[in-house]
Image (tube, rainbow, N blue to C red; front, side, top):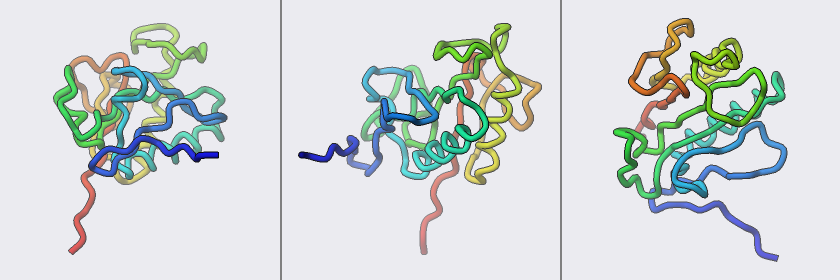
Length: 160
């Protein structure tokens, strides 16, 4: 029996596992099949750590979207998402569906979304979170960020 290994690009970045069993996240995004979900190992570790913590407080899964294409190639329409340090996260819905939602929709769960964003900041490696809900602390507004939030982690410190 052959053990399956997650796809890895020439930077040493792995694709986020797409449909693992019994985890606290689901994947969405473009292109299909996870081709846009190659993550810096630090971001991948952060995502897996946060989804594990989230499972302890809420039954809903975190929606993880675009990260990076293999090898950091250009990822239209994004100006970022090339370093493996950026990830888009879907907002929580009160009905728990795995479907897009805007912060203006009555099904938007602001409290749960705020809690999740706080977990990202608690990690100590988040550089910025872009999201247009002015009621959530520490987020910065950005065009086209009403239906998801965008997390960027700090660059890895170079060893001397």
